[in-house]
Image (cartoon, rainbow, N blue to C red; front, side, top):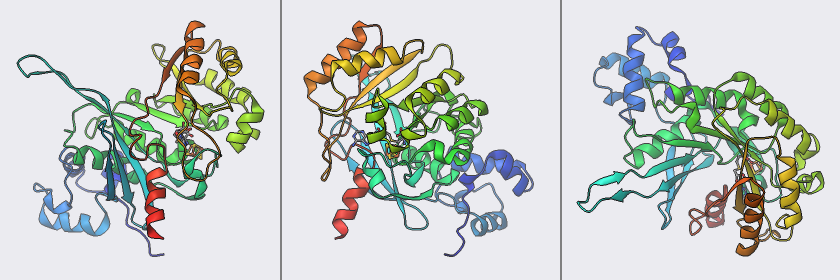
Length: 359
Ligand code: SAH
Ligand code: SF4
């Protein structure tokens, strides 16, 4: 394979200042890239022409191409991107809060948005319920490919660079399995001269690689973590997430206890509810015990079925009973509304649909 060009978005401002002279130009390049969302170096009008040409030879600007877009009735938009080597990944634009207007038609409350980004093409973890896992692992995303998902979605939705946005690393792939590139993307997002998305607005979701949770904690980046727990005993968890053998529930809980957490915040535990597997009150009871002593918040997720899976979506009444039990016993718990259920909600599903069409 021919060597691929790096993207401007692969580098922190500091790194670019070592590569591009005079270094004050980097601030201008950052502005065009992360404030104006331009598509080419040629649009960077305050750079000399020769420099624009040299940059275009050395770097790509945005390494992603939008190849498919699906809109749901609730405002969710799912994107499929093609990477330089022809591989594809997904990102999702989620509307978290409706816009509200007063009688005069003035906006009183702005809509809030979250972007769900991918960190790998495929995934090594191989969870039994996850469509991304079915295709195996292809490669890590570069920092630029992670950063560009947010740039592309903001641009496509006319979301000004200084409007607040949240990032959740919950797309395709296991973020902690690509820790180096993830950490760099987090830094680039945080840069005040760029998108200025603070660490508190970024949540890393992990299937529970406990040693890497420690590593992320040691980096002290200030991000939140969400743990995909999904089961309260190791037997079921190993069925669902095979690497639970090496990183069992106890080791994850210990790592979470060591993780530096903003005292006002809680660690999110995601619990994928599968009918007749983990949707009973006995599991809810065990969950309370497991999380005692942790400032936790539980997010119950409906399993989203796809062709070929034996797992089933839970009944609404069982979800509610599960939630009520946790709340009654003092645990904060929400049910994730199935955003974009009429498109291809869970990770990996849009990509899978594209493949089916190829046959
Ligand atoms: N690898 C990381 C982040 C990406 S997966 C992790 O596992 O946490 C993001 C979330 O999507 C996880 O909580 C995962 O459990 C959930 N998910 C995967 N397949 C799903 C499905 N079929 N239905 C509902 N949620 C699913
Ligand atoms: Fe990977 Fe997360 Fe899917 Fe598991 S749920 S296979 S860790 S992307």
